[in-house]
Length: 140
Image (tube, rainbow, N blue to C red):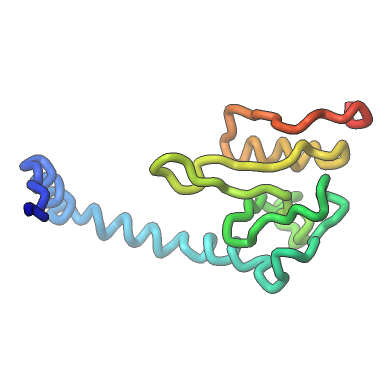
């Protein structure tokens, strides 16, 4: 039984180019410079358990809370503010086929959370919105 996979000649050439031109080193330097941002965003609300409602006034369904490991965070608004409520939205990242965090899942926004919903769409470059729950007449 064969357990190896032949490597394309172009692949070997590309690896050599990356090593010669220090492309990998510059990319790793960039990643190291930016990784504090990822760490700080991931640890903002980790102290609280995922079954605890952080901002019930922002949740259409308070009994459905995002898992902390896949929660979507918004940039603080206004810029420079340190309030946790400005970065919170009840939304999670969901993996797509072969791509982690490809989709964002959230509930239909409450009337007073429309601004956060639009911030989510703009910040995460969302092009398509699909609504799966019925829209209540009191929200129109």
